Image (tube, rainbow, N blue to C red; front, side, top):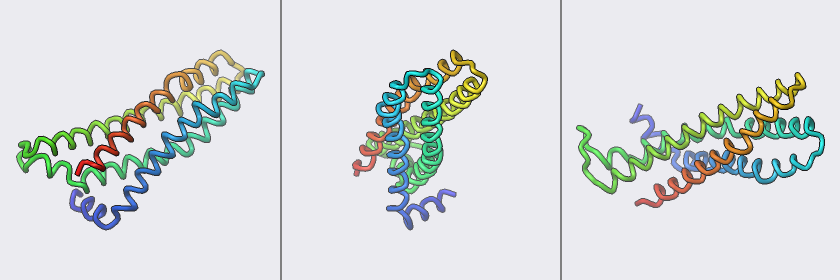
Length: 178
């Protein structure tokens, strides 16, 4: 499998990096837009039910873009991590560190991947909460719908924005490491 990823990256380096970057842009950029543009726009709607329906609809549109982007991002991250040879530069066959700088980069790769995985879990939780809000709205349970949506807008989306920006920065560091 490792040889396949090396070859895949060697043959399609620019496409893989492009897909990785554009996926991060769609996912993180979409969350920033949602939090600071769509949320502000929805909050101007006076009718609470209509406001929450519009927010749930906007979140659904975001998630329709974000879930495939997150999937592509994770796949390309793994291909790049192997294809760029971070592990091979850092440790020998027995796992002994052969270069401290290369090891720090290899650790950064793992931290970045962990961040993206936390973000995927958070995205899944947001999708679940949004679906629960839609069900609550359908049954006229506005307090429950509000609680489901409020957690997304106040905490979950901002958390993913911060984590996403940190991961993007780490990607820039890794890309410029050599």
